Length: 80
Image (cartoon, one colour):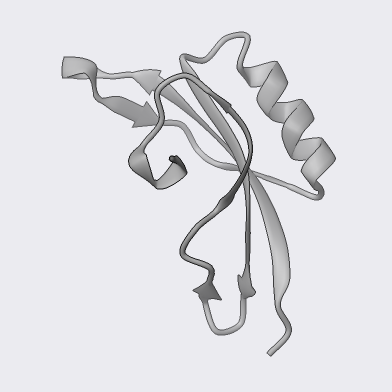
């Protein structure tokens, strides 16, 4: 049961009725790379979040609360 940390960047665009429409998530190799990617996307996207999640990928067991590295704009409540 090896736990590992994964890093992701998720960007969003404004959808109909003020709802957020998620783009495909981007997996990153490090927190630094996730931060750089998020900062770059923040220039063109309405909302962006970079976060890490720690868990056991073989079991699919991850922490419930992601650790936010970067945020911009309105985000889903999971990133509060």
